[in-house]
Amino acid sequence: MLISFEIKGKFAHFRPFYTNASSLSYYFPPRTTIIGIIAGILGMERDSYYEIFSSENLDVSIEILTPIKKSIFTIKYYRTKEADLSIEKFLRGVEDYPTSIEVLMPINHDFISYRIYLKFKNNSKIEEELWKILESNKVKYAPYLGISEFLAFIENPKKFEEKQEETNIIHSVIPYDYYDYVLNNDNDFLILDKMVVDFIREGNIRKIKKTNDFIVNPLAKPIKLKQKILAIKVEDRFILWMR
Image 1: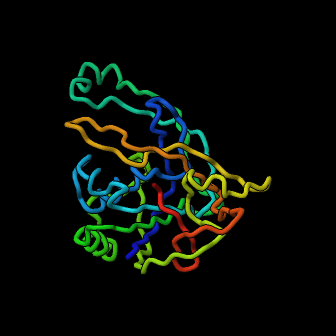
Image 2 (image 1 turned 30 degrees about the horizontal axis):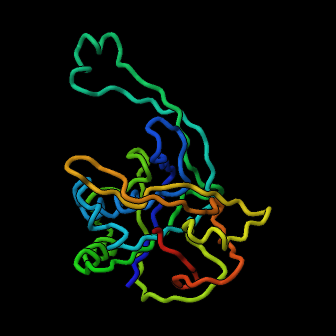
């Protein structure tokens, strides 16, 4: 059984994993961000779900539904630790730290919109719980698109039987494993990005378990292939899992 739902918001920012200071953003949430959203919907604790939602236990895919552009914005961060909020420091003025970040915005639409696809391999209990929450729209923690300031909402949950079919068009992001199949015309706007696929937790430390590169068209157009491959068919869409 496959589950899909749409997640939408005004803005998004998904920072690359390989830097702590970069203002750049991916065009779509990495797999690890997606499973974080799922964990939040279910009310799971931070960093507690890496094994449960690993690529061995959960298949994940994502499709961009609305064309996306990037713009640079300046965000001001304020120190809010108790030690920095004394009367003396307040009278001097609260320190702020302006930071420029790359923000995703929709082109000719009100919201950025993604469709997320899920297939639980061996945990029907969590699958059923997630479906009930999506159907009732009563999430445990509010979802957001990358940073907590960019709140999101969920729409249009659906269930499907898994079907496989050969195709030369893919609507989801494409793992690098299929790079040689991609037909890159001059008119196509394709992006290749390296992302984390899985984390593991060792004590209180989060470590990267697996990465991969993914191909996407940020203008929400399907990606054409040189020849047909076997893909997952969901209604009139064809997707590949993020592994």
